[in-house]
Image (cartoon, rainbow, N blue to C red; front, side):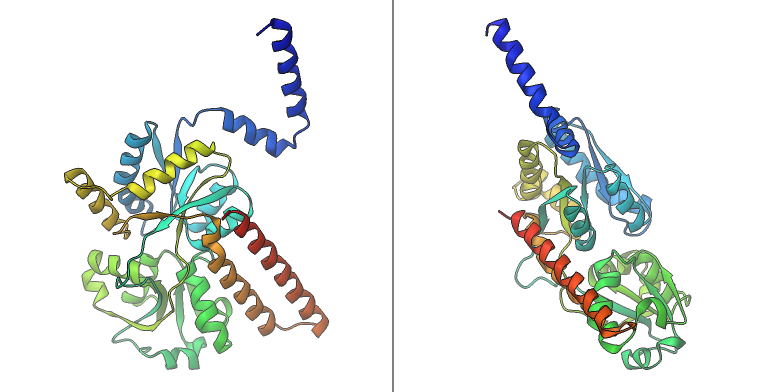
Length: 341
C-alpha cells in the first residue's frame, strides 16, 4: 500500500473513532485487544473459600481449553458481587437470574449458557425451612402470626432466597418479608439453613438444590429441618460474559460451556464429576438474553404486587407507580428479545 494512501486511511479511522460515543469507543478498543485473562465471578454459596473450591476445577479446565488464565473473583455476598460487576471487575460469572437481568439491562453482560435440564430430573424450587421440633412447624402457623417469628432469608438479589418466596407466598398473604417478622437475618442459603437448625431463627428461605448440598455437608443439622412450603420452579441461573468481548471469543467461551462434560472417556468422566459438584449434572446448554424473560416477568409481577399492597397518598400516585412498572417491563422485554436474535 502506498504510504500516502496508508496515511489517509489511518487518519480517516481516527476521525471516525473520535465521533463515537465514549462507551462505544471504549468497547471498540477492548474488542481490538486479545483477551489475556478471565476474572470469573463466583456466586457465594456457603463461604468464599467453599465457593472458590467448588469452581476451581471448572476454571482450571476452562483455562486449559482457552489457553489463558481464569481467576476466581469470590465474594461473601450478592451485594459485593453486584458491585464488582458494576465496576467492570468481573468478565464472566454464574449469576442468579435477578443479578443477570440487572447486568444485562445495564448493557454490561450477555447470557451465553444456562444449566441443562432433562425430563424426569428433580426441578429446582424455592423452599421454606422450619425446625421439626421447634415451636413453629406449620406453614399456617407462620402465616397467621409472622410477628412472632424470626426470619432468615437470602439477599434481595437471590431468586429463591427472596424474590420467589416474596412473590409466590408472602405478598399474596399480605406479608412483607422485610417488615412483618420479629427479626430477620440475611445470609447465604447455607447460613439461613444453619440459623434455623441451630435455633437462631424460626423459619428460613432456601432452595432444593442448596438444601441437598446442606444435607451432605451438615447431616446432623439437616435432620433437624423440615420443608413447610415449596414454590413452583423459578427462572434458572445463567452464565454471563462481558458484552464487549470480541464475538469470536464469546463463541469460544460458549463452545467450552456447552461441550464440557459431553464427551466420552476418563477425561469427560472427570468433567462430569466437576459438574455434579456444581449441581449441573447434565452440563450447560447455549442460551441468550431472552432466557431472562421469565425473570423479567417475575420482577414485573412482584413490582405490581408491592404497588397494590403499599399505602399511597391517593390512587393517582399508585397509578403513576404502576405506569412506571409497565414501562420498565416493556423496556426489559424489548431489550431481552433483541438479545435473543
